[in-house]
Amino acid sequence: MATIRFAEEADTPTILRFIRALAVYEKLEHECLADEPGLRAQLFGPRPYAEVLLIEEDGAAHGFALFFHNFSTFLAKPGIYLEDLFVDPAQRGKGYGKALLMQLAAIAVGRGCGRLEWSVLDWNKPSIDFYLSLGARPMDDWTIYRLDGAALAELGGR
Image (cartoon, rainbow, N blue to C red; front, side, top):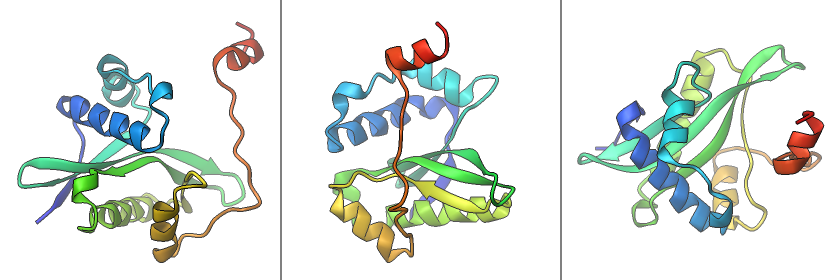
């Protein structure tokens, strides 16, 4: 029987393992700069920037969901943005991903959120099919833009 719980500071190495495995799966390991001290500070420091759910069975963590709050001005309500959802490949097909999303949806409803949103890579058909099966809908009219690195620093005046 799998259980889902909020991660604690001692779970930082497990969270980092999942993040690195996700980066490999998404063919983005060259962009994964996360380390344990950085994660610990940002997730469990004085001002946590995100929260993490872990799904466990028989004392072992098999997946995670990392999320944070955003805000919809159109709804005048908070939302939840799911940054990462990952289940170990050997554990897929057991319902862990769906269980994590169900728990996250329950958290969103319980916190009065108007939305639960995430992004998925265009080529990731298994995940897209999974999300569609849950009733999620793509936001085809929207394109994600990003500022990072030198462009972010330049715009920020540094």
